[in-house]
Image (cartoon, rainbow, N blue to C red; front, side, top):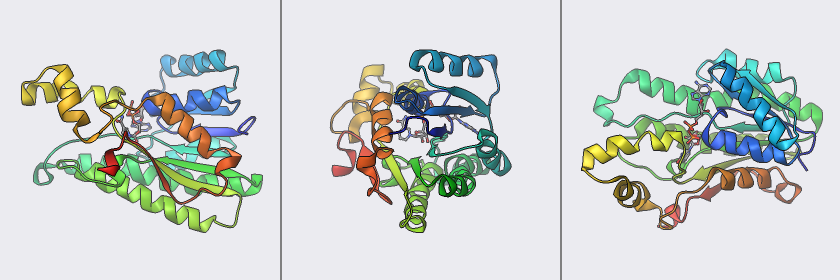
Length: 256
Ligand code: NAD
């Protein structure tokens, strides 16, 4: 059980990270919310989740594009039994027009941050004699789409790193796995709808069905609650021998 365990969820003031944080808090974990901002809303969110769930919930500001801040997040939290590497951004452009700064930011936030947090958290997990690392990859960690070079590279990278961490901890009570969501309707995805509507001169409904969910056979978005449930399962005793692998939550995307 995750009761009383400390769970750090990077990039969790919105979307999937927040959904996972809520499920872990509901199950009795002490939860650390994180993002790069440090606004009254961020701290209010932590209070709200604490109130909703009865769990201890803190917000710690740390910019996941900064290696020292990644390691600092774990140190400031003071404990880390469950590490959910979720922070991520997206940028869509053909590779010959892809801005170098965007490439660097995506690799830093979506991939490098997980290296730094994992390196800082593992000694704590070893000391505590238990640990769970859950990396939020993507269907794009297993397949590719045009115009998403940095994102696909980072997500394939994090799937690879997950396997290495699993091997390095294989004989310890620590597991490392990646969840590969298909499309989930979060602010990250919502932000892509207006541009796509303009680009294809399509209605919102048509963009969702015929553009976004073309590769998702279920024709439904996955939900943040489903991602939370999947993460919670990976933290359970039933999942103690599940390590170094990926779980797709993608409505059949990768079966196609
Ligand atoms: P989101 O934009 O709602 O959430 C991203 C989170 O990351 C936010 O909390 C944001 O504040 C945080 N973040 C961004 N830059 C940061 C930084 N420099 N430092 C710290 N935090 C930062 O998006 P989401 O859809 O919830 O995405 C969460 C993760 O799930 C990402 O890794 C994304 O690639 C992955 N994912 C999303 C989908 C989807 O369809 N939404 C599908 C597959 C994978």
